[in-house]
Length: 242
Ligand SMILES: [Zn+2]
Ligand SMILES: [Zn+2]
Image 1 (cartoon, protein in one colour):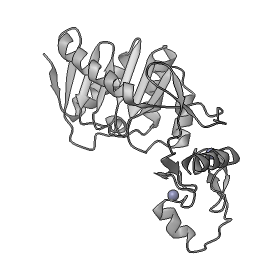
Image 2 (cartoon, rainbow, N blue to C red; image 1 turned 135 degrees about the horizontal axis):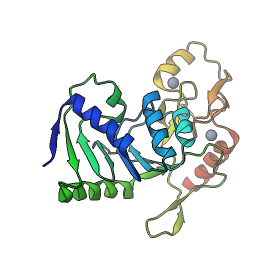
Image 3 (cartoon, rainbow, N blue to C red; image 1 turned 60 degrees about the vertical axis):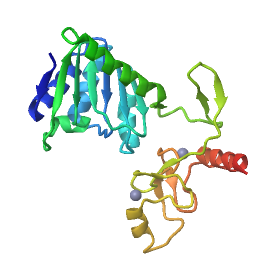
Image 4 (cartoon, protein in one colour; image 1 turned 45 degrees about the vertical axis):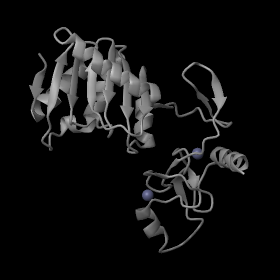
């Protein structure tokens, strides 16, 4: 039978699932922050050749967190906008809970969870796996490698393996000052907070250090909020949308 977990039990078992993973690890959590402890646990798993899939759904991941994940081998990151479920599993155990991933080391909220052991509740375990993979199927893979920049309009791979050009407009961008994820709009490249500060000086050439489109570090400003590559992608998109 599945086991009921309180806050402490939940974080204990999430950590054990990460530590105990032998071949696979799937972490589903809308909010994702890469704390030091969490990163170290992932690193250990990755060093043991565990295949790690992380699905998240809120715009919390900053480029430097992405870059530290990119250092790890066998890590795949996916974004699914309407994610609300939280589920952590390896090949033999699973926790379904209210707890977000970054909270497992904090324990500030009251959480509940259920621990499922594949050897005891195979049917339940397999149902939850099926749902997790259904989410994965429609999630957007997030490119982790820093150096690979797209030079053409990106192609989207559809499930049957074919590629088709995706002229879908870029929807999410970064605040060029604080890296927060905001709506993509090269005419409004600051988040509300940073804009409130910028507007006091209104210097359109004031140097910032994040590209509005890709979030990589580069010299940008209100006048030129994107690096050269992202600027040309944007121009191409504008052409396609008219
Ligand atoms: Zn900002
Ligand atoms: Zn860029």
